Structures are given as structure tokens and as C-alpha cells.
Image (cartoon, rainbow, N blue to C red; front, side):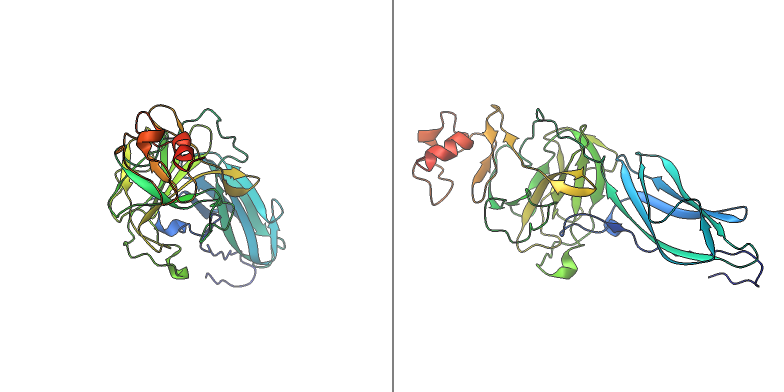
Length: 323
């Protein structure tokens, strides 16, 4: 804090830790490879200008909230909310002394939200399963089953896929890596202090939505922020970092809707363009499986009887259940 004699202008400001509005399980920005946004105060003549720099490749909405102030005049009213395009810098507010014969001070905090507001997901977009085509994994949490941790809108339609630590995770759709957190150990626990300790990757798609890959293995990332990836590209390995009870991949499709991060329903396509809907306790497979593989205790028929090519898709699952 600066202190000067009365009659001389000075400004006091405090940059409080930013808060990223996201789902309950999401880490804070402190764990990111690079920050998404930088908010700073710059002295200009007898005033202070607060500017925000969007360091990412996705639009960001930033909100400044005044927490304490004395003798200030602002160029705009508080709180202040602005949408900052990817890679751009905006002036948010100018603050000066209301009474120029007296000192002034102000404290503020800021929070931000990623994404173009109300982005519309392409209905024609194709998502591949986020693992290698020769593997089969079970869904342990989905919107149609018992909910353990997916309680908010950001994770409502997310799925948890059980898989051993070290399983290759691939991009489900073409895009650009916008976040890459990689340093947390694979010692996950379902305890509050682990909620900000998960490794994850976000990939932005061309319609303004993004895919999230969470609980990744420590130091397994094969991508960097700003890198373009195509569907099926290996991006990391699955792990057990953060708020987790067992090794798995948390996968979600998300967008910014009316100022909140929300998830939306997932449908995958296999190599034959068959639809795969991930539901609770179903098995996911992209390739040709053992014809005698029975994917759940409820199955009444084998893949051999229900799928000509051995691929498990929605139709095959219904057949195996005897539906």
C-alpha cells in the first residue's frame, strides 16, 4: 500500500484471486499451463485505468466488483461486465479522485466466464469416442443414472468412463486446445480439498462449444495451449487426479448459455456412423469386439447375435437387452 501526505493523489488496489465460474469439479485457473486472462491497473495521468487482456483463443466475459472505495469517480458504474474477444485487450474503467484535494483508494475483485455467450452447437457435428478404437469401457455415471458428483448444469450431461490409469485419451472432435492442466498427482479422493487438483484439457470447437477431458494422468499431456488437434488425436492419458473415487475419464460437452457454463447431451459416432448414446452402465466401443463379449449383467444376447460387424451401438445394446 502506498501512503502519501493528504492533497497528493494515490491509488490503492488489490487484485483478488479470480474465480472461474464452472462446474463443481473444475479446478481454479491457478493450475493452468497459461492464464486465460490478465486484469491489471495502469496509472494514466491523475487516474488509474483497469484493463483486461484476453490471453486465450476463446471469448471471455469478465466482471469487476468493487469491494471497497474512498473518494472515487469512475468512468462507468460498478459492477462492470465486458465481453473480451479472443486475444484482445479492453479498457474496463477509469478511476480518479472525486475530490482532487483528497486521496482516493479502491479495491476490487474480478471473475470471468469463458465462451461466446449463447453459442449454438452444430447439430451436424460428429464426436468420436475419446479413447482408442480397440478398447471397450463402461459408463459409471451419466444423466440417466444415480448421480454422485454431477449436480450442476456444467456437469449435468457429463459422463464418467471407467478406465485404468494410463489409458490413451483422444480428442472427440477437431478443435484448438485452450486449457491444459498437467501437474497434479493421481491420488484422487472424494474430498473438498481435491476439487481444484484435477488435470484436464479443454478443446474449443468451431461452433463456440468445447469438450472437457478431466482427471487426466499427471504429466501425460501430449498437447499445448493453442495447438490444433483433429478428432482421434492422442491428447493425454487417463488418470485419477482431483475429486475422484477411482480411475476414470470425466468427459463433457459444454457451452456458455446466458452467462453460465452448461453441458449438453452427448452422442458419439463409430466408424460406420452408427449412433452411440452413453447411458449409465452401458459399454462404449468404437471397433470390432469379441463376438461373444457380453457388455453387462442385464444382457440377454451376445454381440454375435445382435451386430453383424461386432460393433456395439445403440441398436446392438437394445438387442442384447432383449428389447
